[in-house]
Structures are given as C-alpha cells and as structure tokens.
View 1: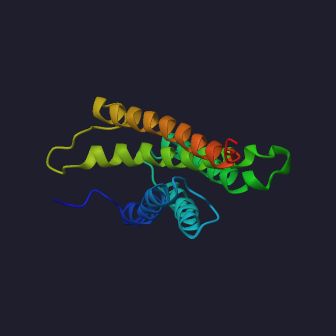
View 2: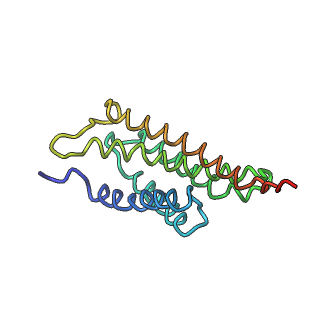
View 3: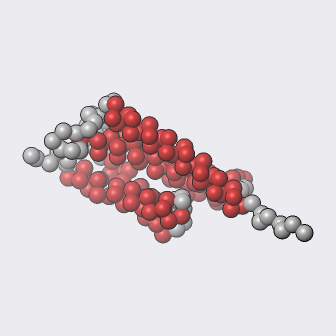
Length: 169
C-alpha cells in the first residue's frame, strides 16, 4: 500500500509529535504547560512549527477548518506566553496563561484525533473524517477533559496562593 501522506505531511506529523509529547510531559511533570520552562519552550516552538507546516496542507485545496484551528492555536500560544507579563491582569495572568496553554493543547488534539482515527488502523480506519461519529465522540471527550483539566489547574493555582493555615492557640 502506498503511503497516503505527502512529504510535507510526513514532516508535519513528525514535527507535531514534539508539542504532543512535550505537552503531555508538562502536564505530567508540573500539572500545566509553563511556556517559560524548558519543556514548555519545546512545546511552544514545536507547536509553532507544527502549525506553520500544517498551513501547507489542504485536502480541499484552500483555507479550511484545520487552518482556522491553527490560527486559533497560535493566538492561544501568544496569549499564554505573554499573559503573566500584562501587569493590568495582576494575579489573573497565571490563570489566563494556564487556560490559554491548555486550550492550545486541546486545539491540537482536534486535528490529531481526526487524522489518527481516519487513518488507523490502515486496513479499516475507526473514523472517516471530522463528521464521523467516532471522531466527534473523541473530540467531545477531549473537550470534556480540557474543561475538567482547566478547572483542576485553577484549583491548584488557588490552593497554592492561599496563605498557610494558622495554628490554633
């Protein structure tokens, strides 16, 4: 069977593994993607390269939903990378950073799930494009995990910021 991916598609897939692995490692290691940490920088740069290479891919021959997701992802990465530098946000900067970086990871999962489920297993793919029920179900599960994850991350930030309990006298 001939490889259905173009050379750019293969390069894009390989590059896109960097933010996928870095993001998962950051969630495991720190509970969030911190764009200033070494693994966070790998995530940010890998995501930017992944999105840029995706712009050269199109099954329709023009601008498509994947390109729009890429643009949203770049915006989320920019917001997440600079949120704590915006003094007007005060203490909310860390929350915005965390939500934006997690949102960028969720956005990456949309085409990842679609492409993976529409290609694997090669002999009988689970899904058949973004409108197929298995792909839509997987994306909805990812969305649910995103919301639960962000709420948990916010809880962790809040708990860390709380002053220590004073001993009773």
